[in-house]
Amino acid sequence: MIASRRLCRLVGFVCLLLAAGAVAGAQAQDRYPTRPITIVVPFAAGGPTDILARLIGQSIGPMFGQQVVVEDVTGAGGTIGATRVARAEPDGYTMVMGNLGTHAASLGIYQSLPYDPRTDFEPVILVASTPMVLVTRKTLPVHSLDETIAYAKANKGKATMGNAGIGSISHLTTLLFNHLTGADVVQVPYRGLSEATNDLLGGQIDLLFDQVVTATPHIVNGTENPIVVTIPQRAASIPNVPSANEAGLPSLQTVAWTALFVPKKTSAAIVTKINGAVQKAMADPLIAKRLAEIGADVPPPEQRSPEALRQLVKGEIDKWVPLIKAAGIVGQ
Image (tube, helix red, strand yellow):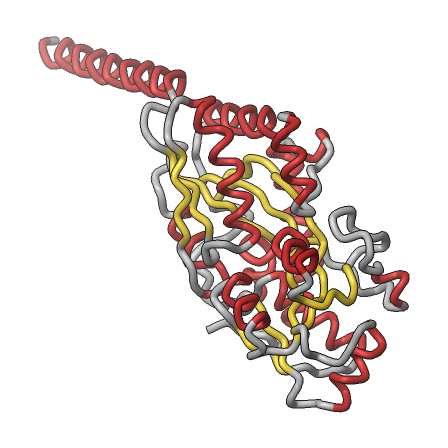
């Protein structure tokens, strides 16, 4: 009898602790955020993902009353930074600005990928999308897609094209370009598009598939030769550059997307709060204008929910992983 009463008291005490913990957890979610937030950019500073992360961070920070710190964690096609966030506490204070490379292609490239893009993150929101644009060093004697392909074939094994690392969008677009044209350009991997751009501007490499976001200023300033954008129509920020359809290679279609993810088991309340803040930022005319200026397309409202992002990731994995494996690409 005494033992039974003790057991009942123990069970009651445990229930009180659990209830108190649940209340404390709910209160923490309601108060979120109470300290600075970190957005991990898994590529080099100055690249398109970094630019978008800083733009969003500067906008949502004042809404939350907290500093939003952008931290560039480079390496392995962006998977080092993504891994860090996958292993972080699911409290909403560490998130990653991921993309096609980190959250789809990586699954086909790295045999021992430390995370699964489908299950180790909670999708938050699709931030922007942008086409790629083929650019050349200023001194390369080509001015059209046909001339570029002819130059690459005439210099097979010598013509060089930079990329942001194995599995990056620029790498995947180059694979598609080689497959469609037989150009067989030599790929030169970097730790991010900004590093590749520096070498293109310096004349160390010949070609680069850059995102319109980061290529536009160089094209406008006349320091790079633009050849073609990888969408059916022209890009608004560089209207003089022909589309893939106009250039005669309609199958050269690649759209780079950028999205926010948090670690799995982050509460739905926190995900909703972050999503709402970013939605508000995207509705700001000044932010929308800045995104348009750099060539980033704001997704329509129906594509901005966590579930829509989850489906996007699944579709991209289904599209790219079989192609990557068929090509025998293996990351180091």
